[in-house]
Image 1 (cartoon, one colour):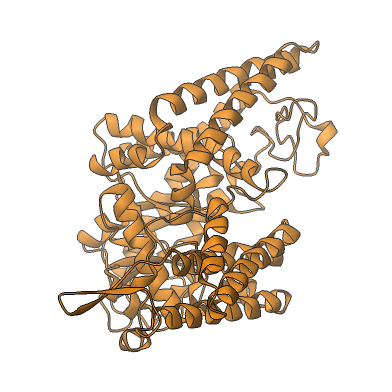
Image 2 (cartoon, helix red, strand yellow):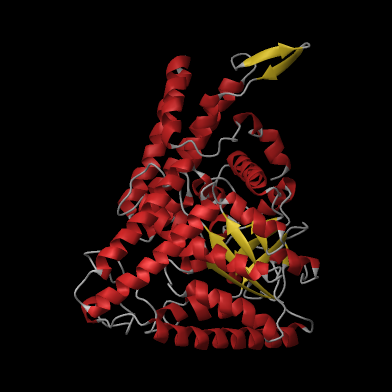
Length: 516
């Protein structure tokens, strides 16, 4: 069996800047990846195909794809794209006119798709695919924290609330998750089992490269599926992966007058001004070759792994969804053709849940600390270059938990009595404290700093949300209830995601020790 897993994630960007980092990042990914990938899945589902892939959408991205502010911003962005394309089509150079006409058609198609299917958010779009059994939806913790470094109480709360958020949006509780950054530390499987998680993803080296079967973790029934690097890197290798082929559209070269991308890769060492114009026919020919190559790679790998283990093997290829369309313009076309070509070649395609139900599970494995980051350890999120963020995260979580615990104490919390029993009221202040704390500890900030990718924005965001936690907690601790409420309401204007987040469900220490 072959399983394709796509991981869709962006940090909370709404109301936190527009360009060059901010909402623009969301809208580019939405237009270039989420719209066309959903269209591919819908097309294949309409043909009666099921079990196409496992699709992870993190709660923080799902919140943005359903958010009214983001929906309005996306509609505006698509219209602006079409206007920029129209401007290019009026150019004097034939290649620029061709570019403008091509982009105008693409923008018009995206606008029609968005207006017809997405104006009420992404949840109805993906719920339709889930209900048709076209995909398995993977959930995850709220705000995408790096779980191995997280306080057990906040870890359990984030995961439980994330799964509840997924059930609310999609009508089903996910059986599996994409653990943020594939981060794992021994013992986390116990928390997964307690939350109802049956399977999750790790990177191939975490299983010592033996990804031919899912493996129950230690003495639990929770199964870890590993990414097959040999197959996945056929697509995603920075040195030899398909997107770097000379015929594909170049991601980095812009027409600075219109913001459109006019060039093909041409060559890895060719400077931007020297790149050749994009040619869709050349790109189509390259897609066909790369589909054929990928199918042959999967077939070869399945045969060799099945012979090695003496039973039918599983191959799992996993990628960021944003690779398909945003980073690799032709990715959605390749994806549709691959999902047709694999069954035609006699290869069974299924989701991770399908693989588990079909028995592609081996012996228990003593999984160790790991991630899918550089070095396959925790250095990206815990290295010296982000030590200040690690300390900030610890401080913010400790302050948030202490403040919420004191506010919920029967002697001082919001409560009433009903038929002689204490009833705790929901407290918007406590909710916003935990909401801001989760945003502060997003794994994205450390990743962006470690990779020197908009590092300044990342640090600013981490400290901004930490500041929100501090000032709301300070008002609460000093007994200024009205001020704390005003502050919480003010921060909620920008950070009002996860409206179902409820601080009353924060587990106590005893509950976490039982699942540690």
